[in-house]
Length: 196
Length: 181
Image 1 (spheres, rainbow over the protein chains, first blue to last red):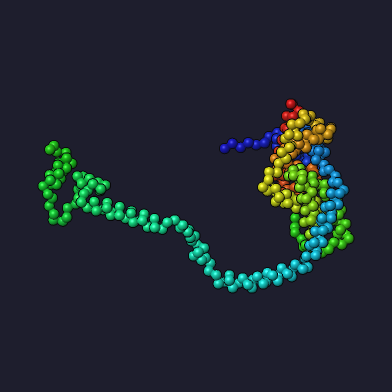
Image 2 (image 1 turned 135 degrees about the vertical axis):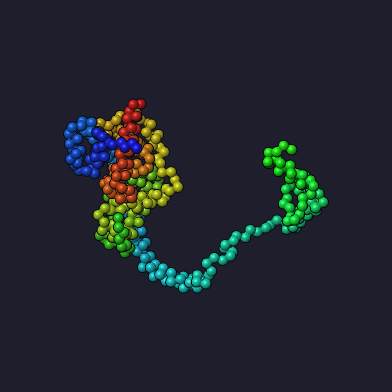
């Protein structure tokens, strides 16, 4: 882990700014001592003060025209008059209106279920041809029925071949037929490493 | 800044005088702040007037507080942010003005020597990012202390100072680069 410590003048950058901007009226003792020894820091401090002085000169607010001041004053007076005129009337009116609204709305709020089914599920209207949809379903059913019927008479629709060598387990007491017995015998010999 | 009780009664003569004096005293700083930070010159008067209207509705708080300008700047800032929320609050002409004149760097410890240099510096401030520009304008045009700026912007004092430091670095860079050209 690398830890970089501020050394030299860098560690006093905050002090310089605080002093230049007037946040600190006097430098801390450590910074004051450094300032007496460091010409770079003194120069930097002076440059910051110079920039701040320049900014102050450049950004001093300009006087506002007298007619603008008058317009703003009149508008503020008008606002106070408007609020004064409405305020005594509005306060009891607003209170009465709020009470009335509460009386009217309370039973509806109380009896209303938290969530109604209509609010829970959005119904999407079907504006298509219903006959067409029913025909489509019927066609697909017929297609599936045809596949199943053909599958009963032939294995061509099945996903596997009937010639595949299936090792179906024998039922208890059942003996394998001759071909299966020979196949099992060959596999057993191969497994034991004998040459057939 | 605490919120105090509202006083919406009709203005007495004392209150009227106070409000009028406040408009006269604080308007230049509010105009400078709104114009320099948000750069919407056609709406500045309306925003400043609206600021005083809002403040007039709570005159007791304004009179009771010891920093009415800070209170007004807070209202103005909220109004500007509401109004310009969907607009880009950048003075697009600032960069153009910056390129108009070659500038000389100001001497240490002195104020700008001439109008051209002042104009140049104003343009450099206008070209700063908004969060840096706002700090500079609040300090120089609003005449707020950094502690007050931090309170207004709801940021720590260290952050306000850090932004000022960054802004000054950018301004010095801009002025020196311009001088080299």
